[in-house]
Length: 136
Image (tube, rainbow, N blue to C red; front, side, top):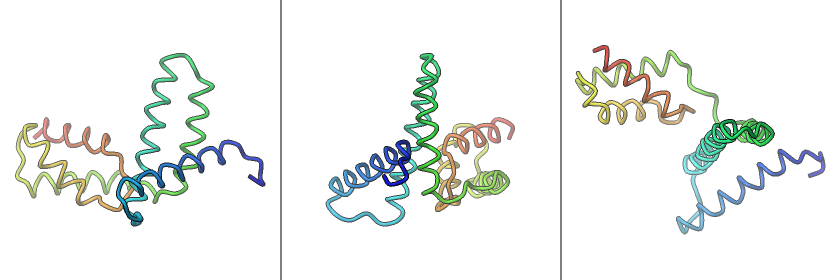
């Protein structure tokens, strides 16, 4: 407030409201992992909004959402290294014995478990798993 940064103020108020709502839903205080999941979901919502605003020709609103993402990402751990993500997917495929795209669910579950605690986009992991299983 004192810095007169309306984008940051709006993003932080939205984050506080989302955390409070999740606490009320659960009926207890959130732990660190649950709080982080709330931030991740807000970032994902913003990314979806940017896509919709861009399609609708509202670049001004897309820019506002992008600015909010930058504020929210400050509260997330650093993004996982792409090489580490690929290694986790390869290990998950080997661990589950997956041979075809029908095994997507098992591989995704194992890969996401290996990447727990790191900021990683599930969509990116999904595309990588799909590509690896299609080539397997």
